[in-house]
Each structure stands twice: as C-alpha cells, then as structure tokens.
Image 1 (cartoon, helix red, strand yellow):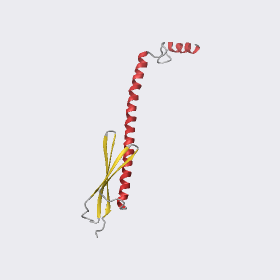
Image 2 (tube, one colour):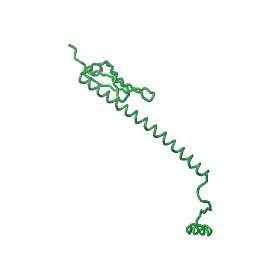
Image 3 (cartoon, one colour):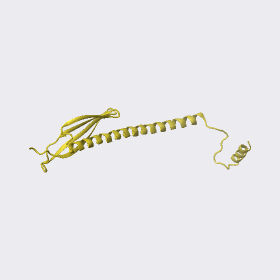
Image 4 (tube, one colour):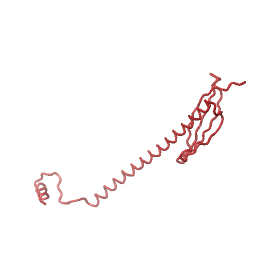
Length: 141
C-alpha cells in the first residue's frame, strides 16, 4: 500500500507522464490484443505449412534425381538398355522411371543420348524431372 500511495503522490505532482487511477486492462483492450495475436498466428501458420510443403516436394525431387542418376549409371554400365520403364516406390510415393533412346549426335555418331524422365504425383500435382545421359553406342557386328 505504501508504494501505491507514493505513486499516486507522484502522479498528483505530474512526475509521471501517464498516470491512471484505473488498474488493469479493459475488456476491449484484451479483445483487441487477442484479435491481433490471432491474425499474426494465422499468418505464421500459413508460412509454416507452405514451408513444410516445399520441404516435402524438395525431398521427393532429390529422391527422383537419385533414381535418374542410378538409372544413368545402369545405362553407362550397360546393365539396362534403353528404352525401358521402371516403377519404384519409396515412402508411399510411386516414381515412374522412363528411359527413351535418342538419335545419335551428328557431331559424334558414337554418342547416343538417353533421356531419363522420372514422374511422380504429390500434393495432387504431377511432377517430372528429366536427365539426359550420353552413352557410347554398341558396335554393330
């Protein structure tokens, strides 16, 4: 009580710039603060959800690139011969790896471009990456 009496005395003499005889906040002030915090939290939640979706898509894109790279190595080592298609699945996502045989290059007829496409569906959207791998043509006997 002694401190409150001192504060009131200072208010009476104008020592403090803002003095009020009311203690606490009004209901309108509390509701305004809650509304502002609600708007901010909804905005932050939207950013967090978008970041999560982007992270998931990037993880899937890295996995698709890994399938394309592994397929390119198989083509290089002649484990597989184009054209072919393979279905892979990881973490509930189905990746379709499609390899198309290209036309030999006019600048170097020994090189054969193989187009590797990896397709998958996520977040109600079809996604695709494409990689071109150049392999040596098999010599014809």
